[in-house]
Image (cartoon, rainbow, N blue to C red; front, side, top):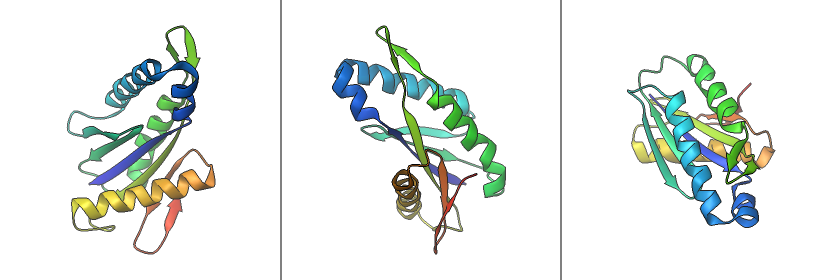
Length: 139
């Protein structure tokens, strides 16, 4: 299985410019888009603020997961019309795989968040895989 931690880059600017109601509408739109990207067997949740997590079961390898990751980034990066305003956010995503990156849920979530943070720091607006030794950027 894999845990994805997804962060919306630029979300605070949406709240500042358009207000919290627009931000809430955007979060709802993001949740709907994520639902459209995932399978019924996957688990989607909002961690808080502008962060979401997806638990993807039956993952054979990091390579097999990459089409889903690219689909999520492409889908969430499309502009959304909120109250007549065109809102755009970029996505930073970290990925941890079981059992390679950890044995428990808390450890996997932490490692996926570390990978997400490394991607966000690099301003790549993509995804990154984590391992016990290093964070590997997505292609």
